[in-house]
Image (cartoon, rainbow, N blue to C red; front, side, top):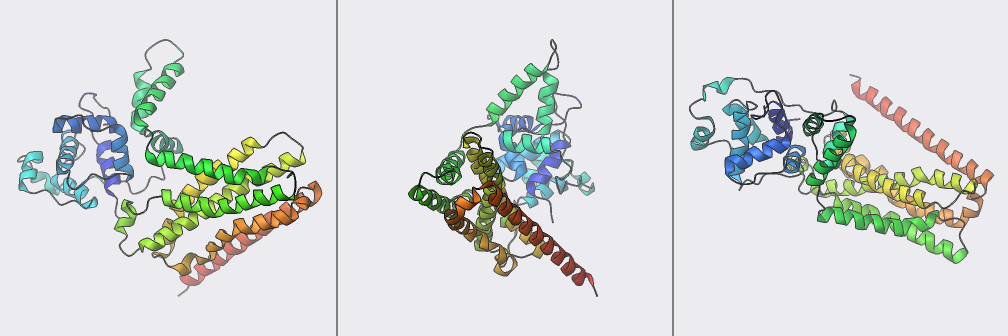
Length: 385
């Protein structure tokens, strides 16, 4: 698969040198500043450049001056050397190639290096450390910026960690701002907690309270995955825009399926811990309630993005037939809610409850093992001549 605009941009930026710091890689923040210098304005934040590289945001085709300034900075900083490099970057972002005036503006008369082989962009980030991914995705701080920040505060009395932590917190605060999407996620979390938490507060006071709790739970398992799917934007995602044969409706459908799978997995992952708390007669389960809802939303968000992509990579297409077996997960919540409503008195008895939980876990493992063996057998058949 061809590298994206963001991947190529990251490659050229990491190959660039900061003109004010010898032998120092050009950081996202400095690139944003230097673009501003070229354009005669305030430029862009490191977070904005990070979003370009991660494909979260895209430079508008109408902002041609931004693209020219970006390429000019990369060229001056020795990261992007040739006209071929520049057009490769533009093509990856579906922008038109440089015209003669733009060639002259950026490269002047030095276009004879056009045949120089450009650097090979990194096509995957699997070798990047988990720490670097967390920095970039949670705090919008690149690994380069983090290393620069640590180096900047090394001078001074020992220990250095208070200055490092203070500098990191300032940097994260500068890069982070509350958006409408963030507010929407907070609302979804609050709604999920309100709907799901009563189903974990045992023992129920009476039959009516148990019915209300499980009705709220069933409503939550149906509504929250839909809200997660709505918050996962696939319409404006650059990757899905480039997959011309992928139906946008099926991408959305599998996004909702993934959200349902992840949300239910998160809830059922914490559920055994709630049983253990109850059997041991420990205190309130408020923290387990929060954990169940939070983990459900995190896994729902993750699976909503992963499921359609995995199906696309596995089959090089998206059809209902390829993943229809997993749509039963939409019924998992209602089925569990009705089952628990009728049999919670048995489940809340330690011996019978633990036995049923172990039987359920055994069934899950057996089904997973059977499915894995089936997939291996199919793969072998496909490889046979």
